[in-house]
Every structure is written in structure tokens, then in C-alpha cells.
Length: 446
View (spheres, rainbow, N blue to C red):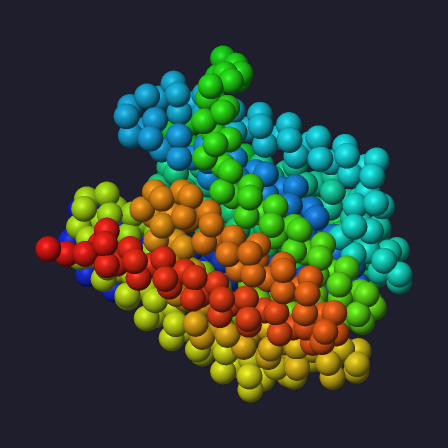
């Protein structure tokens, strides 16, 4: 699936996007399918409150583990350039720093969670009848979070070594493991929420063991004890490049806190369950659009660096065209099949009754989101970090959070659901303005 530099400059944009997007889409598909099936199992075999509990815990633990993602992305930029320059010592030192920073920071958060877990769960919306199942699910998953953080960091390093197939397998293998363990612990052994938590924690272990195997037997980055010497300058370089990811995940965590608490205030545990289903569908249904966005990055980035602006413009328009077509298909599926989709998750009649209405509103502006996703990805590919950060945060940070804070005061729980399409429209307009200016100036052909 890897594409050489020469091909990025010469082959058709359409074929390049397809070849780059397929492995990215497959990885995202399995990751989202894992979360989706996990939610279906706990909803069907434990109950609708279990969906609410998982919706409270996972954003919290994912925020901690995403430290590994941020350090992985930032460090891999340093690592790739070091390998390209033939500086193997710096590459090894960078990888060692990624390991030390990821394990150290995630472990600190785990210790904090052990002492203040109940307060953290309450802040993330673990209230009322959600509290006990959330506490049961929280501890095993929390203890395994450093493993997940190391896996997320390791995945980016594997990609930096241009081994996309191994990186894809690092997402597929634990996803399959989690699904099988869910069946064993929840259905066969009837272990309830603890079984669901144990399955999730062990899937992190499975992923870690696979990543560890890769870095023992398949990597070119063979570490020694001498590489684990701390260098402040290198650490600062990694952190500075990791900030965009840290900021994005921080905003997502704040949004999760706000949504769960607002929904609980407006509709109790029931409303949190409804959003638990919707949030899983958001990632699963949009996986092909996200895959095209990931596939677009190397194509646009390489040609931008080569100052081949005509191909950059073509890649932008082609990616938007295909991503929009897929987003429209997703919207139609949600519009027509919302109720049958929801029925897969739970037997709770009230949840089945209320969720399709909310689901259709949340996906209401999905046909236009490709402009926002591809537009912000372009600025990332072009190395324009400030604009990339601002546009990446536009939907959740600058639009959705203020809307969720304001609209429910006037429209109740409907204010939460309608905030999503409004945020999509506003963020698309803002990104479109930035992208149009870029097309008319920086990417203007002579």
C-alpha cells in the first residue's frame, strides 16, 4: 500500500488518494467497529445504563491514553526527519524519549485516577444510576491505560518507518480480541460490567504485545540502554510538535464533560445513553470520509513541498468530491435506517423511541463536512500549524461548546442535538473562507 515519492508526484491524484485512503480507512473501520460492537454487547447483554457508563468512562481514559498519540505524532515528525538525514542516533534517542514520556505521563494520570477516580467520573457525567456501573468499568480500564498509550505512540512510529500494513494490524488485532473477549466475559461467563472492562483492558494488552513484538523483531529502531538518556532540548522539540494533538484531545475531553453533564441535567441517565449510541455512530459511519482525509495528507503535503500547486489544488477538489459523495451516502443511510440501527444497540423501548430523532439531527449537516475536514487537513499538510490548529478546533472548540452551553437554556435537550449541525455549518463556512483565500493566493497558478 505504500506509495513512493516519485509516484506522489506523477501518478493520477484519484489513484493516489484511493491507495493512500484504503489502509487508513481499514484501520479506522476496525477501531470504530470495535467501539461499536462493544457498545452493542453491553447494551444488549447488560442494559442501557451500561452504555451510559461506558460513554462516561471511555472519553476520560481515552484522554489519558491520547497523550501517547500526541507524543507519537510529534516525536515521529522528529524521528522521520532524523532518519531522512541519516542521523540514526537522534532517531533512536527520539524513540526512547517517546517511550519515556508516554509511559511516565500516562502513569502519573493513572495514579491521579486511583486517588480521585470518583471525582473524575462525576465531572465526566457519572451521576445518578450511572455511578456504580461506571465505577466498575473504570478501574480495570484505567490500570491498562499506559499500555494503550504506548500502543497509540507505537502505531505512529510504525507508520514513520513506512510500515503501514503493520500499523493497520496493530488496530485490527486488538479490535478482534476485544470482541471475542466481550463474548466470553459478558455472554458466556456473565461477568457484567467488570467483564466488559476486563475485555477492554486485555485488548490493550494484546495490542501492546503486538507492538512490542514489532519493535523487537521488525523495526529498524533497535534501542539500547544508552538511548534512554534524557535530553531537555529533544523533549521540548517533541512536545512543541505534539501540541496540536494535545489541544485537540483536550477540547474533545472538555466537550465530553459538557455534553454528559448537560444531557444528564436535561434528560437524566436516559439522555446520556442516547448520546452514547450517537457518539459511537459518528465515528463508525464516517470512517470512509476520515480515511480519505488521512489519505489526502501525504499527497497534498508532498506536492506542496515540491511547489506543484496545480496537483495540490487537484488533490483538494478530488478529496472533497469523493468525501462529500460518501458523506451523502452516510446521511441517507442514517435518514432511512435510523430506527433499525438504534434497535441493534438496546432493548430499551424509550431509548429506541428517542434516539433516531436525535441521530438524524446530529448527522443533519454531514453532507458538507468534507470541506471542513479536507480544508483543515490541507493546512496541516502545508505545514501551516497555526491555521491547522485553529481550523481543527473550530467545530468542537469554537462552535459546538458555546452552542451546547447556550441553546439548551432555550430549547432543552433539543438544543443539544441541533448544536451539532449548526456547528458543522459554521465550521464549514469558516474553513471554506480560509481555503478559498489560500486557493486564490498561495495555490494560484501562473
